[in-house]
Image (cartoon, rainbow, N blue to C red; front, side):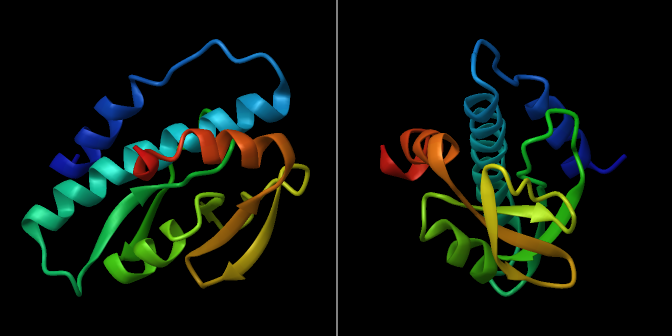
Length: 128
């Protein structure tokens, strides 16, 4: 297991609980993975050139998903410009809470809707 993979696993182990509604829970799941990916990006930026790709975790609503995705720093920052957008593995979008706004070979970018969008906006780590 690579050091980045073990870092991802140890960060996933800190997953929070305690949300009630299904849509809110899904929004919390995705916000948690976005926060994790912010930390992974910071670690990668310390070690890699800005033109390189780095590994993030799928930001879908499934608590058990730990699929790794490769994105460039520019692609990641483009998604982060909108607090309701997330990077998910192809086929992981949930049309009940999000819509696909762009698709690549390796991942889709989704935009949250309704309660999930509200949770995403509230939990945006860049709004501190």
